[in-house]
Structures are given as structure tokens and as C-alpha cells.
Length: 208
Length: 249
Ligand code: HEM
Ligand code: FES
Image (cartoon, rainbow over all chains, first blue to last red; front, side, top):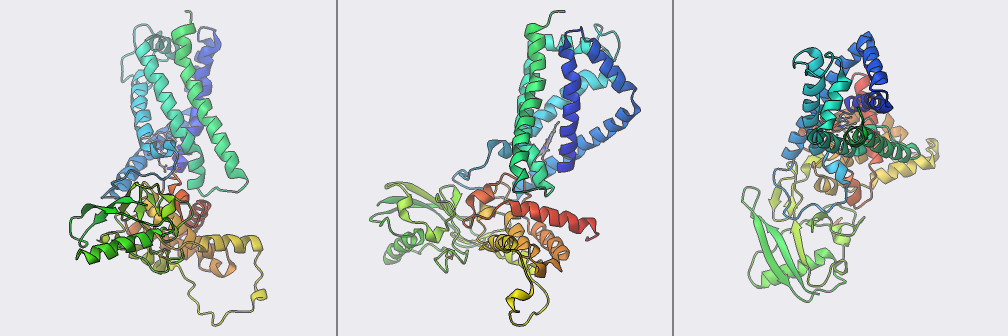
């Protein structure tokens, strides 16, 4: 769970870095070049398989964990739990489900096109022309809104997840744990804000 | 002080329980929470009703038997305090106080507010001991231990096994309890000898008892009457991975 989550967190950094190239203002040229580089790279192919495995492991264990934990308290409390915990930590499963729904939409819109499972839209030059696809999708306010909100929830997930993954692996230290928590917060904000500004840019600032 | 008490009543382990409301007048703010319940029970006995069953022994915060879920928190509103050491002055006059037993699959209710915590004992039986007989206490300077480690082990050993961690956890996880019991040995040279076997067996027993899995929400630490730190959970995880990586099944 924690190892898979850590791999996913690492992946997000690379994904965000690539996506931010779309904001370079060069009509998607540097973004497309990065995509071409990545698709041509055999190492990335391997990383992709690991990524799918990580998602599957993380989601399956996450769901099983949640189901088991519901069962661990068959009779609940009458008075709602007043023990102080962070809201992010209490709603990991719920934010996870939102991320999962987004993930499905996301795969249909991009990855399945690349695989040829979904027909390439006519406005795209090829099934690798992710930039044109992204522009059209982000110009749709509904899609942009869903994208934006999903990444806010991803930020909530990550806010707890970052430090939780270290704790789960037994990495805890009086001096470094507070630092891990701060870095986790910065990471969660950077990832969610980083992704969330992309639809904002295309919706309000982009000129074709 | 006057209170309205909403208390879980359940005849036995199989019976279906329910809440009953008891108004209680003239409670002294100096009464402990258990004395307040004694006071209510005396009135119930005088009226010929069955008194409320609750567990207690030392009434000084060391035996761990008095856990009650009070107004949504194990051991009530005051942190680092057991129910027996909680005083009625912590409540507002006229307040409604909801009193429930611990809720967990691994802590079935026996009667009213008393739950069966023998699942904790079975975790201890699985490995919470040192198996050699050491005879009488050895000369204390013969095995030097740093003050830092000794203090830390003692912090872990402060666990009274009351079950508040399980009661507080949204997952009913017993990780803080098991971690404290494992850490009190793991930190000291005498405990290192069987450390791998111990963590392996105790974790296995904990899972078998039906406690939930930890998701690091840290509610256990917040409501532990002895202030046991979740750092011990990380320590247990470390010990566990170390045991697994050298082939303990
Ligand atoms: C890119 C997306 C995701 C990333 C980077 C991520 C990362 C993480 C990390 C690092 C943890 C902490 C693990 C631990 O402490 O052991 C975690 C926990 C969790 N994740 Fe995700 N996750 C993602 C997507 C999902 C999805 C799609 C689900 C699906 C339902 C999900 C469900 C959960 C659950 C239930 C937990 C709580 C388990 C716990 O706290 O131990 N996550 N996530
Ligand atoms: S009665 Fe012993 S700890 Fe409360």
C-alpha cells in the first residue's frame, strides 16, 4: 500500500512536469516533444507497467482495507466520534474513490486513444496529438471543472498520504518526521495546484 | 450539579441492548466519574432497579479496567486521564452525558458498559514476555542501558491496556496497544533476543482477533490516557519488516 502509493507520488511529479510544458505558450511544441520522447523511450514502457501495477495494488488493497475496517466495528457509536484527527486522514477512501473516477475518465480521454481502444477525435492530428485533445477538452468548462475539483481532492489525499506512507514503512524520527510532514504538505499543495492551474489557463488565458 | 445520563444497557452478550436515560441531581463537582455512577447505582438499588454494570478496579489510573466511551471520546473530554480520574467538574451543569461501551468486533459487550478485552490478553500471550527464567533481579549496573532508551521503553510500558486506542480509532485498530507492548521489550537488550519472533507472533494474533488495520489517523494517540506516542507504531512496523525480511513466516 505505502510502497505503491510512494511510487504513484513519484509518478505524479513527472506527470505534472510534463503537463506544465503545455503552458509554455509555444502552441504545445515543447509538450509534444516531451510526449514523443517519452513514447519512444523503452524505459518508460517498463515504468508504465509498474505504474499500472502500482495503481491496481494500491486501489485493491485500499478497498479491501476499508471494507475490513468497516467490519471491525459492527456496532457503531451513538454519539459521533469526537476524537481529534485530521479530516484528510478520515476521508482517504472517499478522496481515493474520487481520484479513481477521475482516473477512469482520464484514461478514456487519453490513454485509450493512444492504445486505439477509443477512436481518435477528428480534431487531433494523430493518436499521439495529446495537446490538441487537451485544448479541446479544457475549453469545455464542465471537463475543466471536473479536472480542477479532482485535483483538489487529490491534494487532500496526498496531504495525509505523504507522511502516512513513511509512518507505515516505519520511517519515523524525532527530528525528521516533522520535516516529512512539512514536505508532504508542500508536495500536496504543489501537485494539486500545479495540475489545477492547467484547466484554468486553457479556460481563461489560452489563445489558439 | 445536575445531569441527564444516557447510558447503554444490555442484559448480556446475546441480548439486544439500548439506551436508557437517567436524570441525576445533586452531583458534587468533586466526584470522580465512577463515583458519580456509584451514586446513580445507589439510587437505582434503593428503587429496586438493577444497577449499571461497569468495570473498575484501582480507581487511580493504573489498572486500565475503567474505560467508558463518554460523549464521543474514550475516557471522556479530558486528555491523558482515565475515566476513574476524570472529575464531574469537567462537565457543564445540566449537560446530557452519553455513556457507551467500547465498540469493536474484538471487544464484544458482556453486560451494560463492560466489554470483553481478553483479545488484548491473547496478543500478550502470543509473545509479550521473555521466555527465560531470570531468577531474582540482577545487579543493575551489569547491563548498562542508556537513559534515553530506558526512558523510551518506560514510556511504552506506561500502557495500561485499557483499550481506548481501539475505541478511539475509526478502524478499531489495536496498533497502538500492540506497538507499546512490543516496544517496551524491543528497546531493551533483554528484549532483543526474541524481538523478531515476538513482533511476528503478536502482530499475527492481533490480526486474528479481528481488529481493524491502522490508517495513521492518530486518534489513538490523541485519546490514550497514558499519552503513548504513535512513534511506537512506526517502531513496530520497522520491527515487523525486519522480522519478515529475515524469513519469519
Ligand atoms: C495518483 C493517485 C494516488 C496516489 C499518489 C496515492 C497515494 C497514497 C499514499 C502514499 C497513501 C498512504 C499509504 C500508507 O500510509 O500506507 C495512500 C493511502 C490510501 N489511498 Fe491512495 N493514492 C492515489 C490514488 C488512490 C486511489 C485511486 C484510491 C482508490 C480507492 C486510493 C485509496 C487509498 C486509501 C483507501 C488509502 C488509505 C490507506 C491508509 O491510509 O493506510 N488512493 N494513497
Ligand atoms: S479503575 Fe483502574 S485505571 Fe481506572
